[in-house]
Structures are given as C-alpha cells and as structure tokens.
Amino acid sequence: MSARSLKVLIIDANLVRAAILEEGLRDCGEIEVHHIREMSNLLPRVAAIDPDVILIDLENPSRDTLEQMFQVSRWAERPIAMFVDKSDSDAVQAAIDAGVSAYVVDGLRRERIKPVLDVTISRFNAFHRLQQELNEARSALADRKIIERAKQILIERQGCTEAVAYALLRRTAMDQGRKIADIARALVTAADLLQPGEGK
Image (cartoon, rainbow, N blue to C red; front, side):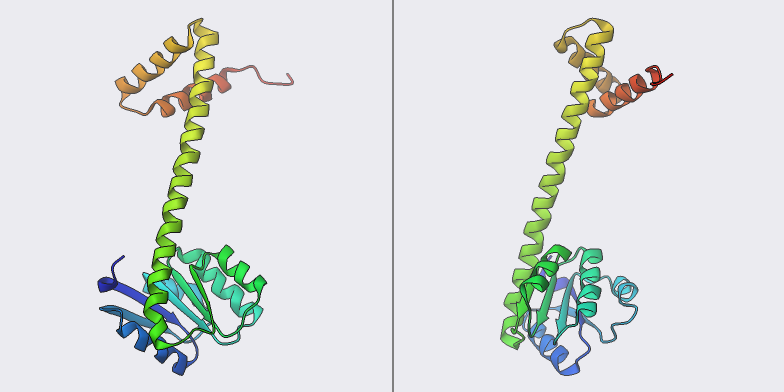
C-alpha cells in the first residue's frame, strides 16, 4: 500500500479528537479520509467505505465498545490502529487477538499520526506475509501426506515400488494437466469409497 492512494477511515464519535487525526493525516501525503461518528450498525458502514486503513479512536472505551471495535478488526483484515486514553493488559491482548496492528495508549498527537500509520501498515504487511507463508507450509504438508497415502495405495494394489508409484502419479498429473496432489487426493477418495463399509 502506498501513502499516495490510501483510503483511511476514522472511527470516532468525538469531533475534536477526529480533527487531530485528520490533521495528522494531512502530513502523510495524498490520503482520502472518511469519518464514521455513530457507532451503531458499524460493520456494514465500514464495508460500504472499504478502507485501506482504519484508525479507531476511543477515549475511555467500555468493554462493549471495545468488543464492537474488535469485531470490525476481525472482519476487515486491514491495517488497524486503535488509539485509547487508558488501557489494561486484557484489552491489549484482546486487541492483538482481534488483529489490531497498532494499539496506542495516550498517544493522540498530530505529530505521531504519520509514524503510527507507517508502523500500522508495516506490521499488518509483515503479519500478512507470515500468515501466507504459514498457510503455504500447511498446504504443502497436507499435499505431502496425501501423496504418501496415494503411493501406499498404489504399492499395495499394484505391487509396485514407491518410486514406480510416484512415477505413476506424476505421469497421470502431467497427462491431465493437474497437480500431483490433486491426482493423489482423487485416488485416495476413490480408494476410500471402494473400501467395504465398516460394521456390516
């Protein structure tokens, strides 16, 4: 995300505090600023704006208000900075669990907005990259497991070696223009369907 094209949403019922955020955002380059003041029916209103970054400013938030903000952060999957006057360890942990990228206590000053915005986006991007890598690793592990199971089925039913079983899977995948894991998954599913039912 570049600061030149950012669409930033400010969620704040307090006009004075929202004005401080807007002034700070003017120092960040070309930014399209939107503002939500009413906290009711929040999720659909955030969805309609579809911001790149969300700045949530809560003076002394109640637990209900915090939970509503955390719902927004869990849904949005966007860089989110939350400004609060006071906090505690439970609120900080809840914010992290909800996906808030920056949780700023007693830090609402114009000169701090740009560095907070930069850190918020950087943290979000770093976490997103790690999440992608984790998902890819999990997917690769699942693929390896299904390929191993498919090879075992071929070894048992064809009486072939592991190398031949893998070559069969690979050749079938190439012939069909599909991934080896997809062929293996289809083979395992078919083998499971053809197994005699248990308990009969």
